[in-house]
Length: 335
Image (cartoon, rainbow, N blue to C red; front, side):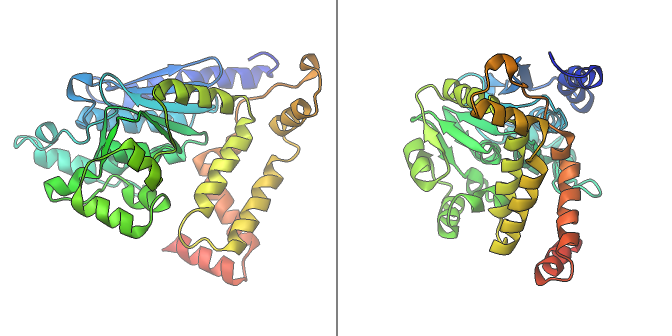
């Protein structure tokens, strides 16, 4: 916190204990997730149910959702690496636990309940909420990454996998469809016919095929180590620029985003970055200013929080009001 004003330093220190407190407050029962925070702002999220290959029981659902929400509001987060303890990333839904006759109805209601005003329900939160963290999220997969586990990985921004890792959109095995946010994340990565084939067959495929299909970013024999190396590399850059890049690419890769909207959003986000503390710090470093005279990065600006993202979207609509683009965006916002 060297070089920060007292108020900002206190805010950063407070945010660093926010994740653990929030998870304890929102998770009933033992937490299935361990979060470790490094001095460089990299947060490692480890699913800890290795005896069940980190399969998703209700405790895991609650713990993952609470962790993602807490990280999204923590301005000290520079990057997140999510992995599974033991022999696997995640084997998907623990059907015996979640669908046990004594608790099945209550569990189903909890998983599918969508709070008023919320975009996703609990089942979807464990995959979708990683997209709401204004910092890169990297999934390191190994062993198996099946069903709900795959949808968690797809919610990350980058996926690094062990070559022997097995993948599957496994819901077809249970006569179901993927309902943990794959309808948002899968369409960004593969063509519709590929999504259809994987979803309808539920077949298991290896990491090399996942790489060819675009479901995996790259392979590594030590995926967690590779993910940490990448996170450290990103953490040396401006946290505001990383947040802006994530917002821009998620918004413009979405279906229905035309070129005009993409170019307007690109310019608007660039305006917000220019002249900011972290942008000036990046420029000083890039220009070769001696390290002793460099500004050093501050914590990510609150302008990149999810609430600010919604405000920015509304501002962009107002800026384009009266145009065909503005009308269509307003219509989507009111839908």
